[in-house]
Image 1: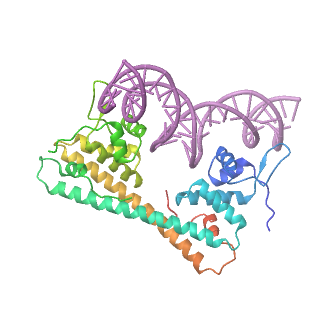
Image 2 (image 1 turned 90 degrees about the vertical axis):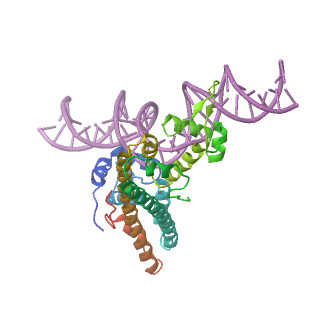
Length: 143
Length: 143
DNA sequence: ATAGACTCTATACCCGGGTACCGACTCAAC
DNA sequence: GTTGAGTCGGTACCCGGGTATAGAGTCTAT
């Protein structure tokens, strides 16, 4: 139980690499509250705040919205056994990400094909890429 | 050469499943212009417009911004002989798409790892996903 | 006891990607 | 020729995720 000295908003911001307004914004969005306030109204945080921000940033990188992250953080608090729910969320996102990859692969294949055709084509003539773009399907990412 | 009867903005919107304002918005954003206007000012489109909207929607699903999509569409318009330039654009986009795929794969791996850890863990205990997200690096999706 | 750095709230603004509403006009059918 | 649906341009608004600015108060070192 390390005796943590209190951090001011600016300290947290610096440590976490975000800016002060962002912290206040997260507070409004119910993602991160200071542990307490000084009499003066100054927000006081501890090291957990820095970790929480890292958490938020990582989760954003993984495609979670702030709203979703708020829910994750809520689970964290209630956690202990709620692990399942967290896992379900993550699994959902995973499926999501996989779907995106699939669609991008289709597009990739299509672009490769187009570029190749174009290279092998004798110059002039209607550009085969243009032709293909006009036609209905291309990579057809179903959605 | 099918004789296409002219479509009004509302027809296009209905066919493409977007709303009328969106079409006007796309016009402002230089994504899609009507083929012409009636004397009254009414926009006239053809079936290509519907296809273009489908194209836009697919591309959006893939994470392209409207600005990027405008560039893709520009390939189509500027064509006519500039096959090389078109090809270069397409190649650029291809690299783009590949970068996106890479990024998503990293995210995918991270999520897989998290879910796995969580599954192998005996219930209760702090949720490993929550733990992992709090800790700096993980799979590090650079960004 | 005062300078300079920090913080407070509040409000406004930014971007992207739309959506909604306005009053005026057009068009087709009756 | 009137009615009702469709359209016009303009402006304003929405959401998400922040960022900026202003004017007032606080804290710390000297």
